[in-house]
Image 1 (cartoon, helix red, strand yellow):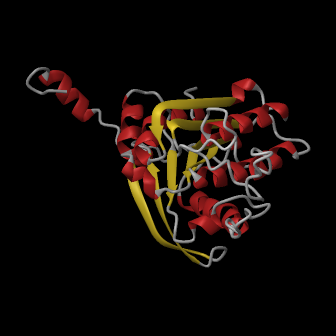
Image 2 (tube, rainbow, N blue to C red):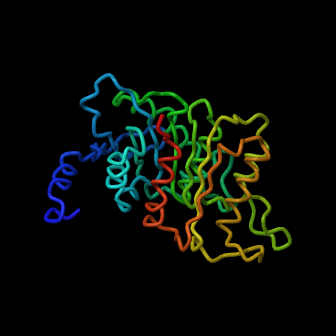
Image 3 (tube, rainbow, N blue to C red):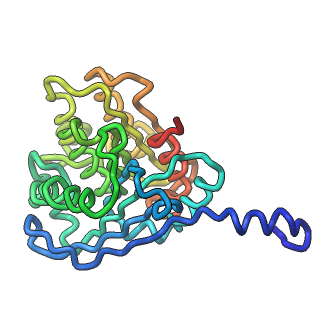
Length: 284
């Protein structure tokens, strides 16, 4: 807003800023991962003025990418527009072990990637969440606890959420690596052996209260292994949504966002972020 054109409105906007407070937790020692983890915690603007209030929380894998998409600015605009309730967002930085720690806890992929996914799951459940509850005022309600991630981090978040519905009420998957498979692509059956799809379909009694937000960009990639004219990222995401429906997840608990010209990078994910936050954190 231009001060000289609208001075009163500009001054009002300055004093009504709703920027989050960033708390950087560095060198958090994880026994599960046998390494140190860096974490960014985005506290709501009124956090220090509301001593008795407890907040929803959203965890993000690949938390280092949040700053690349100006996540604080996204939160500020949503708070200022009263589009989401105050919340605590947590960005978990990936390490050089990312390809081993992210994935699916049930099994590694056919190249052995994701062999430390169980370790990472244990870090989230047994170390990070207890630490956050001790240090910050999280509500702890499952319907106010979500986990999201980007690319392979999205697959990891989805896998952990699906396996622990008593803790996580929602999952967010930005350009998820849902191609994750236990064998190389078979040209005669190119969509077979996708691990996350199999996990969903083989779950005996899923919790149909869980909510799932999934996003793809039309330029996420160029591969089209089954030759149907649709890139694999979109095919894999839509097939996962079909699996969720088959297991009884109601339509109103699933949201799919396809970003025209969207690419596999933080700028696109930043464009999609307001949709995710407004959907996963509805105003009451």
